[in-house]
Image 1 (cartoon, one colour):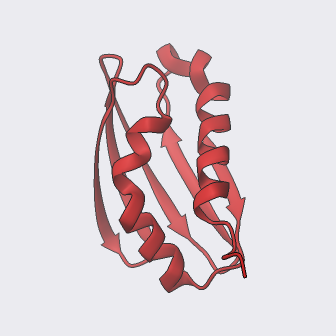
Image 2 (image 1 turned 120 degrees about the horizontal axis):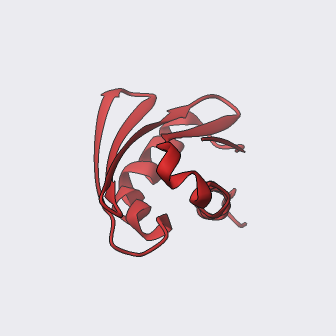
Length: 102
């Protein structure tokens, strides 16, 4: 599953916002019983390990100049939740990356 979210922020601000809200990623996983751990192998990629519904999911978030791309490998057994997860990621991502209000 891949969700691209456009933004108008500089990369430093995107990194700051992701680092400051990474603990909220579990809230976007349906069922509410998710545990998420993150790491930063490079300054423009945040890796994620997600434990949810008896499954281990891996993914990452790539930061580009004009968009952030969320990638999660969903096993076939969880394919039915893809539209729900995509919607939640898009909604939370757009909120997180909204331009500052003047």
